[in-house]
Length: 295
Image 1 (cartoon, one colour):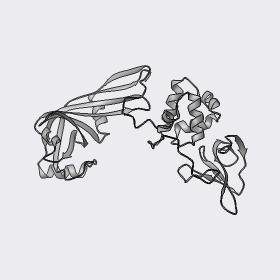
Image 2: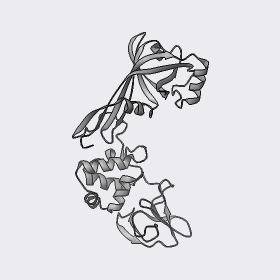
Image 3: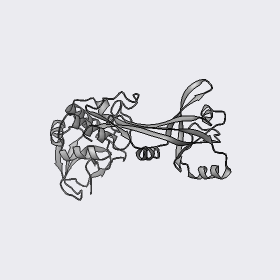
Image 4: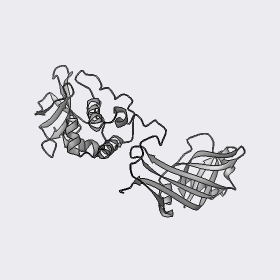
């Protein structure tokens, strides 16, 4: 038997297969993950040293989970799916914001520092009891810690205590543009100024996207436009934005169109026939980034 921190130890009846008890493995005593383990039991919240018998097995995160009653564990109220590691980043940010060490936080939450480090550093989905203890230890809410506030509009999170606003150079702006697939094009259309999100790629230093000939973004052709890409990290209260300004042109050369079709990776999410290729060669690139002042 081998386990990692965050795995669950499940004890089942050898006759019926019913779960009799389960708990979270919060401590290892051997580097190879062999028993014994420190287990925090779901039914009592107590941590005990366990030498698993033949009626026990290890269940890894992502496997179908059950609790001592044979039911799937309840999800925290308001918790939603997030990118792998988001919970750990929120947890570490909340701990640092309060000036607490791993040991201090683990003591308040009644768990081992090793397990807390695991939660901060590895993609994880701890149970409701663990979330409640951590939220209480950090003086925050269960919804905030579990990411249930991520559907709020961007920018409503707490600002950094000491933010630093820095200008980005052209090379860094180009690098950031090449990492994204959705941007916003600002142009003057038939009804006046407008901004539209489009799926784009960077090919040979130019921004390219597809649209329908009768769609509003097609009005950009032949005009100078602004193209903006950004990323807001609500968990860390930081982010960046890049603005490219240049003339939009339609790509009509059959060989150039074929080459774009082979090289682009972003399909228009809006669907439908979008046969007009538009290319913007940036004449001016500017960008800014917000980070903590100590970085």
